[in-house]
Length: 269
Image (cartoon, rainbow, N blue to C red; front, side, top):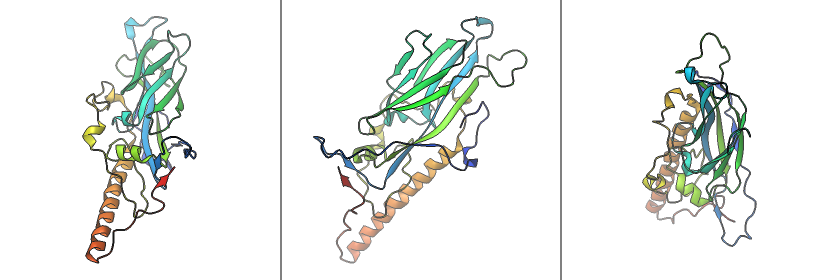
């Protein structure tokens, strides 16, 4: 979904755009077996886009705008827990057109005069996915209805919203992001035994990578679908965990052994 400066209510859309990462093939021949969770998927809502300001009196023929291209969490949470680095491929006329950003916030700033397509490659942490995800975004410098003098204070904003879905995640990845606010766990199988969550403080590094207080945050578009997804997923996790706890207590009261891990809950690859 794309648009300009006005906030967009994604809840009105019939179905949010999703990019499903292909399931990892059988890796039983690997030296170290990877424990994967069947019937589980992890969703990471992201926004990628550009924001361009006209330079006004400082503008020249070769540099009329200052612009920023970025990838952020849809609710401005730190997505560095999933994404390791981002590579932005600019127009070949730029010096060093391949730009690598190794840590969040994943963004870069440049000046120029022309619009072009930017290739954006997301590289994930080793326990997430070993293949990059390629996205494409059109840098927009000029508003659709151009009338009067160009504003140096109101930017032209183009953003796209997507949900990256990771089916059958590695158990370590699942445990690492289970309590992270940027990640959605949409559903858990009945009777599923949760891995031990990683404490939320250890998930966040000292240098925060969220964009809540970003200098450009006042101009970020609002994708309310992401907020609703995160709230629903959080509530669902709490309910599932509480049901599992009650089942164990009920079995203990009846003198029954605790329920075994369901066959569909774990897969030893």
